[in-house]
Image (cartoon, rainbow, N blue to C red; front, side):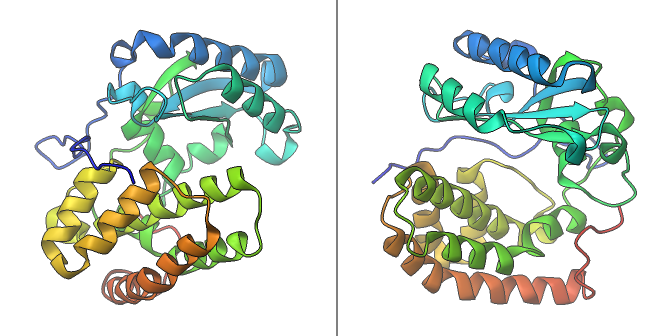
Length: 280
């Protein structure tokens, strides 16, 4: 089983409590240059004039990338609605790049219309990620047009309001699943959700935020020490997912109900109407 290392940090904030984006082109390790360059070429080849800008988000542009473990998560901002874009090429492109580049564990393409990204009266995760966790690698950077964000209930809600559905979706996806890669992806996905939801439970008490698993897990554990072993296991599963769907479902059946109950308590205090996207 994976060893948990003290990697990651909480987001920096300014004197008013707004999150500072510490992603920077200069922080990207040279070993990721080639794959990023090819990602840009692939986007341009298929989107052409519909492409406005490309962003790399996550650990790599923050200088925290781990060779062969970190993902290349990308955001393409387009001039057309996502529903109008032909994305039939995406699966094949991701597969080819994943096989070609061993420096990352996965490459993800995603598409969001600029009009939607710039609609920021309510909290939405993509504008938040562009503003606080991403660096522009192609086109005109729109992060300056987005609002500043704080580690508060609008952000915590993003991780808690859909938690029940996400856990049920993972269990349904794993039922009878024999596709090892799909099982690993599902395991990694739902365990990251659980760890970040754990942090969201205390976000209004601490006003701290991170996408990094270790600091999220440690802060959660100071408030819920009785759940420390279970949350530590979620971190391990996220870092080193398992191929046994029964093992994953067993964990979700044990930890899931408690997490859902705590999320419901949080929502009763901070979002009784259970709005998917709270007003900023």
